[in-house]
Image (cartoon, rainbow, N blue to C red; front, side, top):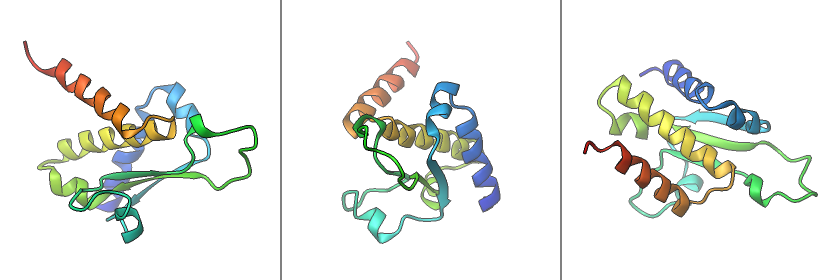
Length: 128
């Protein structure tokens, strides 16, 4: 997949968010990188695949003194996402999942909370 097409799918995933979440993304840069760099990889366990990464101060940890700071940053990693998918439709779905996951970190959810939410969502999608 071309970088331009991948970036279009990331932009679409952001556009598809409910307005209350999109409105809370001021001062957040969402970027596409082909792969995570060494510093980014050091934040996850050995052997783990990094599909996206939030770097910043979650909204729940900001105090009245928070201001005049560089934007928070969300990196979406193109090649690891492509490597785990078999079609453009799967890439698009995974981008949407990763974007939502990283944006949830921006709003203050940690990994444990996100895992519980994601497990709950998967169990609801299973046929009866």
